[in-house]
Each structure stands twice: as structure tokens, then as C-alpha cells.
Length: 467
Ligand code: URP
Ligand code: ZN
Ligand code: ZN
Ligand code: ZN
Image (tube, rainbow, N blue to C red; front, side, top):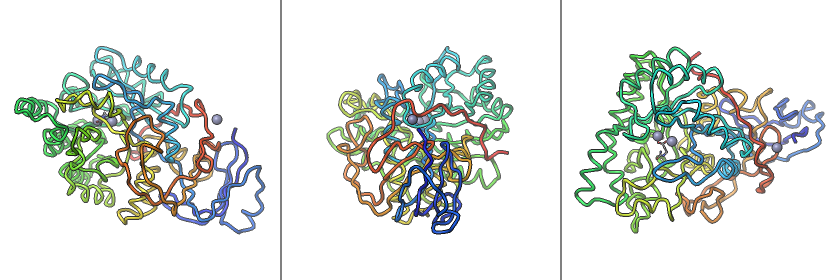
């Protein structure tokens, strides 16, 4: 139940402002903000008062890229909607946009219905869906129109994974043309999967089977090439483009060039590319498998260019691509053949903290933290200002964040349903203290007080950067 609440004394940080203000919450929404200590704020009465003195009061995180329970690589991502959204809440994220999957030969509608059935009644926080389009045909194209009308306004296509999710250039062009007409946003997994598969086969034939070879065959140039091709296909179609999980500096350069030309192209990166590298993929005793994801981790020198892209707005969003597979029993499927390691990494719980650490380390400003993690993903995916900000009328999705607390990330203490942390032992300054979702406390001073089924499906409008 959402009760009339006032949050007093914190520093409210949004993408555009920082102000010492009290925040009044009524009926699950932000009712008002007023400067702390002013008669207007002091006059508010509430059933519950949260003291945020010395803390930040920030919008709940919006993670625009998760894969709960995703069937992939012969197994399933280990977090269910229940465990994954609970872990998200622990980490200060109050909305996820997950990917429903069209199976080859199936309808978009079947895939979407199946994902609704997995999520409904199980989520701790609000959620929406993108649609993975694996099979472009006349029916699929018509269905895209209907999905946009009902709030599934973005479609992921893959230039990678031939035989699984792969679309060829003609299929991509057709989907992009449709998106240009119906207002949808094409999200692209940009890697040249056909060329990569040749390199995989050649590497395995040479006996190169360790996880580190995953990083070597999935070359930065093949990410850049696919990014370039996706940009030009979108330009021909007259459609906007959002490139997911950008890891290569050469791909950032392609995005920057296209944006300089004035094209509506956008880029997302993920914490794993900002904080981890091929050094992790090379960890001995098959431990590198923990870091197998696609696009892959890159050599360290790419990180500076990703941070730069986030500062210059050539990259706009940091999502997690949360797709966890346990080391035992899941990542191990690829012992002796790196191409059989399920692709994906955990992180939905860590994103807000890692990006706060980036503020502490001087990579980004405090407001940019909120912009790339809350406001821009909300705008990109048609959820703003309901989500992604603290303003009158917005959903009361609010995090009380302690910027001075110290924590050490570890699988021992995290809440994701996965047996390792990609950031084991990493020290972070800053920690989530309490989290409200639509005015209800789901984390109360480091205790989980939410419940499965609190989170509701949230239909989305079209991308808010285009109109
Ligand atoms: O390795 C990854 N990224 N797994 C999840 C699926 C995808 O391509 O986003
Ligand atoms: Zn992908
Ligand atoms: Zn993904
Ligand atoms: Zn509830």
C-alpha cells in the first residue's frame, strides 16, 4: 500500500537538477517538491516520514535491457522475473524492460503472451517488454504495428547468431522500413555473425577452446562493421536506430560519425564493458567463462572511449544486458569449446552502484549518472516522465542513496540467483538504503519489504527523442 509519505532533508538529484528538497508522495505518485526548511515543505503532514539527511534522493533506475529466464545456449538465464526483479530493487532499479522472444516460425504475439505469463504476478518492480524479432515475414511486419499500438514499441534484431536469432540485411531493412512507418525503434545487436562463425570454426580447429578465444574471434572490427551497416540500413529506411551493448571503440566512432551527420542513432553500453576487460576473459581454470557475453569484453583501452562517449552523448544509455548463467552447470557447458558457453552476464543489481562509483572516480557527473541510468532510458523507451525522474505527477519510484557508505560487491551478499559476481571483491563507495516503487517501500533501510506481484506491466509510448 502506498501511504502519504514525505522524504525530508535529502539532496534530490535528477538528470537536470540538484536541490535540497523535501518530496511529498501521495497515491503512489510524486505530489510536490519544496526546498527543505521552507514553510511550504514544513507544512506538509504525512503518515510516514523518511529522513534522507546526508543522502541522495534519486529516481529509481530504469534498466532497458534485461533477459530474465531467457532460453539461450541450451539452458535458461538463471534469474526468474521474481528473483531478478527483487535483485534489481536491491540495487536501486525500479523498472526493467525485458525482451520477449519470437521463435522462428512463430508469431510475435505468441512470444509476447509467453513472456507476459512468465512475468505477471511475479515481479517486485514495474516492467515492460521489447520484442525480439527472429523471423521477419509479412505477418510479423503487420504484427509490429499492433505491438506498437499496445505499448511494445521497440524491436530487437540480431546481425549475430546465425541459425538462432539472426536476420539478414534484407530482413533488417524490411523491419526498419516498418518501424519508420509505425514509430517503432529498432534495437540492433551489431556483430557480423556470419564472419564470426567462420572465425569460431577456425579457432576450434586450431585447438583454441578456452574462454579467452571468445573475445578474439568476436572482433572489434566486426562489431564496427555491423554497426556501420546497421546505421546505413536505418538511414536508407528512414528509421531511427538504437545499438545495444556497444563495447568496441570503433563502434562508438561509427555512432559518433552518424550522429555528427544528424542521424537519429543512439547507443547503449553496459557496466561490464566499462569496468571489465579481456583480462577477465583470460582468467585461468575456465574462470574466464564467467565473463563470456556478446558483444565481448574488450582490451582495457576501449574503456576510456566508452566513458568519453558517455560524456559527449555519443552513447546515451547504460543498461545491464542482465543475462545470468551460473558457473556450475551452465557456464561449464562450454568446457573444451568456448562457443558452447552460454552468452551473458549478471548485473541488474550492480548498475546503479557501479555508475555511482564512476561519479566518485570522476568519469561522469552526478546528474549524468541519473541521465544515463534513469531519465534517458525512460525517454528512449517511452516511459518518461512517469519513470526516470522526480517531478510532480511522476510515479513515486524513488531511491534513498547513501553516497558515503562503503560496500564490497560479492556473490556472498548479492541477491541475483547466480553463483558468482562478475565484480567479486570490488569496493564501491555508495549504497542503496531504501527504495520506493509507486510509493511503496520495497527496500527499507537495507531490508527487502517488497513482494512478488507488486510490479506491474507498463505499456510504453514510442521513443521520446523523435518527436
Ligand atoms: O551475451 C549476451 N549479451 N547475452 C544476452 C543476449 C544478447 O545478445 O543481448
Ligand atoms: Zn544482443
Ligand atoms: Zn541482451
Ligand atoms: Zn505492493
